[in-house]
Length: 126
Image (cartoon, helix red, strand yellow):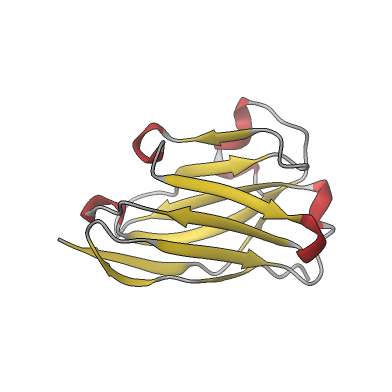
C-alpha cells in the first residue's frame, strides 16, 4: 500500500512561513506528477501546486503565485511546499497527492490523483 506522509504544518501568524514535506517509502516517486491540494472546512479539495516527474514543469493556482514554491527530491522520495507571506485565507488542511502520468492541464484536477496523504493542518492567524 502506497504511503504519502505530510509534515510541517502548524500555526503561524499572517506574514509568516511554513515548509511542508511529503515523503513516501513505497512509491516509485519519479514516475508520478506530485501535487499539493488544500481543503478548508465545508469545501472541496482546491489545487495549490503541481510539479512534473523530473521537476522541470510547475503549475500554481493564481492565489499562491509568488508566495509558494513547490519542489521535489526524487532521490529522497520527497516533495516540498515552501509557503511564504501566509495569509488567513491560506488556512486549510494541506495534502499531497500522486498522479502517474506525463504533464497536462489535468494536473489541477484532484480526481486524477490516485494516491493521497492524510493531510497536515495549516492555520494562519491574522
